Image (cartoon, rainbow, N blue to C red):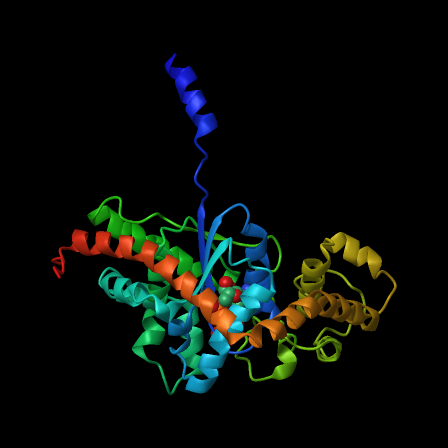
Length: 346
Ligand code: AQP
């Protein structure tokens, strides 16, 4: 009888959807690395998960930004989320600085994160080498703010490219440490890596990842580049002196182009090798450029429409922040209670 009742309940009570959190920094025009490593995969998740996506503008100022440019890039990033297919009815889309709980939780978590852990973060080492004149404390504690972003929403999964996996692992360590002292505070999140496209490399140096802040314009393909620009950049991509389209460690340039082509066409590497058997790199680069441009043209068109309607973007950001703040406040209150902060009585 008991088993029968349990089965009945399982049939009538829908299982709550797992929660996803992720974000992109508005540090420049987004690249196909951001698109294939993150945003494109987000759109595939919106029906099966409860998704919360943020424009992480507070992370952006760990590197000097021009304020006017940061303001513009913040709305542009939100517009790219929408143009890429994120439905605001299904996803919570917001701007990080609109929800103060991120910075508030980050302070608490700073006190539960070790100096040694932060010193080991690859991104900190890379970025402090790149910005040697501005190795600020925010650059160092960036992963703690990212942990706060994720833990505030009790996220189960964090879709990221491989470059951010180390930060998600640190988030897990911080959450486990906190939970060991104050049980049942945080959900332990897991990184969620795309099948392909976890690392899109620079077109000019395929040993490096493609980054939106790269100063060499030929190294990056931007989501908003027009077709001619995209094709020109792929034509100039660094490859090797061989002429065989084959995936392999010894061919990082061609392997990167094959990854990009695979992400845009859905073809696997064996199919791609067969398709370009006996053809030169010129034909292959042209095909990659065409596939990429064709996939991105509708995104660019929709982006332009959205950017012409600032009021709409603001309304999406407002509704998203209100919903996000409601969830975030619940976690923050729990954390404040657990660590012993006295309640504010109005
Ligand atoms: N090249 C890439 N390949 C695959 N995924 C990538 N991501 C970034 N670059 C690649 C993924 O995009 C998401 C947002 O990244 P971010 O903007 O928050 O920070 P980032 O990783 O530092 O990206 P950039 O483009 O390199 O920015 P800058 O130049 O400002 O440092 C993340 O999920 C990331 O994994």
